[in-house]
Length: 327
Ligand SMILES: NC(=O)c1ccc[n+]([C@@H]2O[C@H](COP(=O)([O-])OP(=O)(O)OC[C@H]3O[C@@H](n4cnc5c(N)ncnc54)[C@H](OP(=O)(O)O)[C@@H]3O)[C@@H](O)[C@H]2O)c1
Image 1 (cartoon, rainbow, N blue to C red):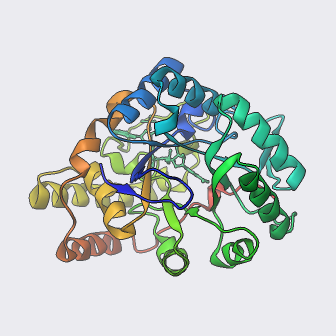
Image 2 (image 1 turned 120 degrees about the vertical axis):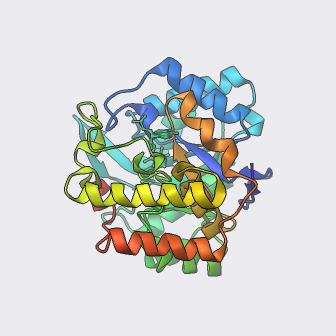
Image 3 (image 1 turned 180 degrees about the horizontal axis):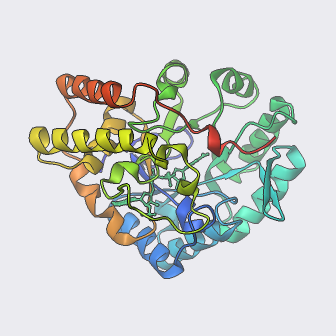
């Protein structure tokens, strides 16, 4: 494992974090609690100490499972627990709400579900344009001053939104999408963070499984799985992404004796330097490739080759607009 530092958190933070969106079940066609717990325990036993969750993941269920697993593992003081706030749900409808009252309620609910009295990294999940950013920042700062939150993060924020927030409350991390196929943040968020000293937690490290090497045209997803509507998973566009996966896998095998899943993780670790890759898993065996992601690096020639493969196969890459919750 490789480690990084997040200001406010007084222990080294693993550069691969376990993402627990799928463990929540919603948007992933359900999940199995026993498998989920085994997955979290396996991650912790494999050197991952950062667990990322959110209330919206299974409408509280992911946080409950994370809380249960950490208690079973008996290592709360060695885990960097990251959760989020600012999305409200009612009757299956989700909307952004990062108002101070909402966040105060969410914090108390998350602490209960996670069975802890403090959250290591508390992140605003999406910018809420119906609430002045300064008000959201102010309440996050209050949580930190009250000792309920160690570090403050934001997610899906633009550099302008981060700058505005940062003027009121110092941001320690930002969570944008980042993987081989979703690289928009390299243009503006990455340089902004490098200048401001903000740690990047790149989400969807495997592009929702597309970069695992296990997804093909015939792969069927359960009812309610986000990949039924994810535009990258719809032919004919999907064919081009799969062609890229195949070429990337060949590169990984021939140059490094690895597979595309390792290459996908290594790419993020090498590009982000001090950043973190959030890897989503809900079955313990999905974490088997973790160990082989360390102990090697992508040299400049391989980075160029990756860029060539992506450019040739996917001349019109698309982002994650489909994930954006309504205001
Ligand atoms: N802040 C945000 O707005 C935001 C948005 C998205 C994600 N995130 C965070 O980032 C985390 C990771 O992103 P993600 O969950 O979207 O996706 P991801 O890491 O790109 O992919 C996760 C999925 O890939 C499949 N997978 C993982 N390892 C595999 C392996 N070794 N072999 C085959 N398949 C494998 C699994 O799907 P199956 O189980 O279906 O096979 C798994 O659920 C999330 O859990 C969450 O913590 C944050």
